[in-house]
View 1: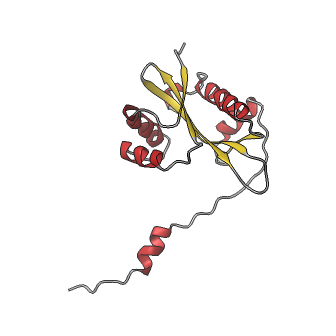
View 2: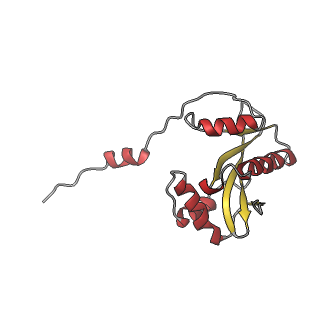
View 3: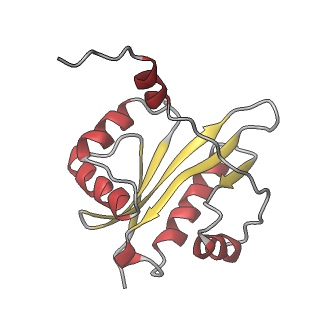
Length: 159
């Protein structure tokens, strides 16, 4: 049985940056502690992190955000939910989602939105088991603007 504590924070203590980066890297999003520091500095003021802690070890985290748009009332969103592979299927994700719901309810949000990749059928089953309903299927399109910038730079003659 895990001694699990969920900590809600705007900015986690710096010693946790390496653990958060390691969780992201394990999940296929290579990160360094410096990346975490830089990204935390520019997060919107209302964003929150939920850290799933066992002692001083970060087992997983959820990044929460409030989305504002013209189509819906303010929506609480779980932007990221990551649990270390060694701690999956042990209630960590369930506790993070419950804490996210509590945060959303306490702050008066109309709904809580979760997104996941279409190939993550394990995550789909997890969310459905928690009572979430599939609301839409969408595609995400991204253009790498750094490649565009490099392509627009004049080439230098070789000597």
